[in-house]
Image (cartoon, rainbow, N blue to C red):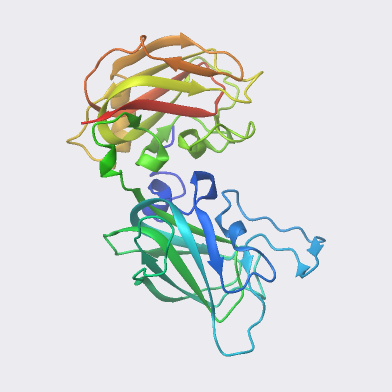
Length: 337
């Protein structure tokens, strides 16, 4: 029954609990790069772990899973600009040079700006990560001390080379224009986060809160086949305290392995922090019922509106599936309080 905080203790806490704002799957975009000769910038934002295919080459040379510029001969350095999936405060970075051995970028620096729209002509860039050394084939975690909200980043590499993945862990900022309107309170783009779960053997559990429908059976949360009594569950923190008025459970692509039933419990824990995840696991078993047990079907979108109990504003939910199986997306619509 792992909490997110207890997973991978060698990884900084911000990388275990923050949302990757540079995730292409959440909507981050490659804007521009000074050079993409060996590998395009957009690969650096992919969600899956970098892969290495020994015998794969393209017209420019060895195929690499990331962004890679050509060897510079002019004394300058390369840089690339990305648009974050959502405006947000950045907690830290992972500059991953996986599989880049003799061709990794030896150092990096990161700037940020905040603009409305996509026009960066008059953007004011601020250094939020000073120059840092990088090594071959490794994750490089760097804490970010900036408390402002940013929309775009510019990654500088010195002088050239490759970066497999840039992960930017942070907290999305809710749009103040959404006040008074229903939003998906548990969406990752609105700050919804997974705190703990009973099992996540298959798939990519963090994609449960991603936008859009799942692209395949690996794009969602799936537990192993349960061979003992009980059921599986997940505990989530909403991006904003609010009253939930509509729940959507999507079992896209789960056909022979969808849960038989589901239910949702909820609590208003605004005086407690997300750091109390061990206590939350026990406490969540006694939370009030928001959605009584409902039948699920294969590869379908299930909307629950009238079946929801009015619990008032809540901050956390426990999503239960009986007895096990896979769910592609969970959406909890409501109005922030």
